[in-house]
Each structure stands twice: as structure tokens, then as C-alpha cells.
Length: 317
Image 1 (cartoon, rainbow, N blue to C red):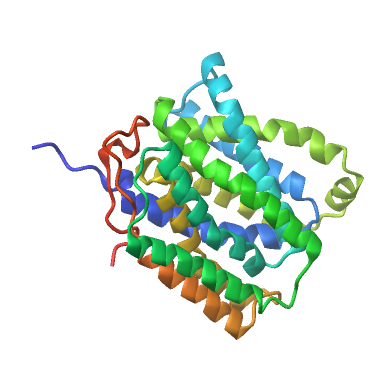
Image 2 (cartoon, rainbow, N blue to C red):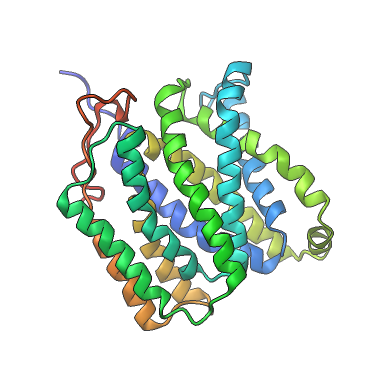
């Protein structure tokens, strides 16, 4: 009998860590942008800061991390570009839209990703129960949209751009996880963050408004940026780990489900949140996500997915 996996390499640990970091990072980013209007700099700080932390701990012998190799750089370059585009459009969405408006778009992504899972990653289509849950997610999101009193055309435009990039991100990054072998999960964290950070250097240094905002940055704003960087390290690690253990659609649903903590924090701390009816719609979406069941692999699957791991339900009861 083989030894059981240590807890830190199990699905509950990965999903729990991802949920906690994802829920708090969204609020942290929104607050950081509120304190200093420099989304490119904040994103650069998160990405480069994560890469530096990973390499520092690797140099100290605390973790294993792949070194820069030409072949792996080529394989991860599209990942970095998609990753960067997803996070940057996320930042711009938060700059012009409130948190709940952004989450409306998130709640409908599993519908698209489930079909892409079937077409590209060898999974079966969802069961009737899961289809019902996914449709309920979309209905709840549309019901919320009718309660949005903070409609902003520019905000919705960035959200729509994010939506398209995010769906591509979920499928392509899962494919890379399946096919590119790394020494450890920290290698994926380092490659994706380091490569994605480089273009941002030229973005914020050529933006006069961001430079002005940085010159006038207060101590509290600096603390807000530091916290977002710290959460970004954890978010990146747990996201890659959870992505390796779940299907693309299940990973997307988990990302939506964790927003229940985001809603709670947002209602308590932020003045730009949804009405009680809008929040009820969002909780309806989260309830539907809870009962979603991951689709199994097809017998003819060619893309090695999940290393044989299947999860009957995303969250333990």
C-alpha cells in the first residue's frame, strides 16, 4: 500500500488556499487601486515581487524551482502573455466597475469553459445536474445585472475584454500544466510571474498619470501595495496547484465560489457594493456553484488531465 499524500499536496489544501487568497486579493487590489491610481505598477509589483520571493527561497534551499531554460521560456511565453492580459484587464475592470459588477462576468464563465473542456481537454460534457447549476449561475448573474445602479459603459467594456481572455486563460494554462513538466509547482509560479512582469516595466514608466500617483503615494498606500504583493505570492502558488488537480471548468467554478468571502468583506469594508437584492442574486449563484459536479474524462482523451484525479464535488461538506 502506498503512503498517503501529505496534506499540503492534497486537493482540499490547494482549493482552500486558492479560495482564501483569491477572495482577499480581489478586495486588496481594489483597495490598492483606490489608494494609488497606478494599476500597472501594482500589477508589476505583484508579479516581479512573486518571482523574487520564489527565487530567494529557492536560493536558500527552502523550495525547488526550475531555472530559466530556453525551451521552457518558449513554452511559457504564451502563458505569461495570457496571464498578463487576464490580470491587467482584471485591474482595469476594478478601476471602472464595482466588485459585484466584475463578478457577474465571472459567474457565467463556467458555461464556456465546460464546453471548451470537452472540445480541447478530453472531458465529457457536464451532467444534467451540472448543466442546471451552470445555467442557474448565469440566471443569477443576469438577475444581479438588473440591480446594478453603478452601470458604467467603460467598466463593462473592460469586463467584456477580461471575459474573453479569461476563458482562453483557463483552457490554455490547464493544457500547459498537463504537458510541460516542471521540477515543482514553484517553477510554474516563477516562470509565469517573471515573464509576465517584464512588459509592465515599460507600461507604467511611460504613463505620466501613474508616475504622478507614485510620487504622491502615502505610507498607507505603500502598505496596501505590499499586502497585495504578499497575497499575490500565495494566490499564484495555490492557483497553479489547484489547476493541476482540477479540470479547467471545476477550477473556474471554484474561483467563482470563493467569492462568497469577497462579498462578505466587500459589504463590511467598502461603500461601493451591491444592494441587498443584488447580493441575494450573487448568493444564489454561489449556491448553484456548490452543487456543480466535475465532469469525468472521456475514454478517448489525449490530453493527460489531472493525473487520474477525479473530484466528485468541489467543496467538502
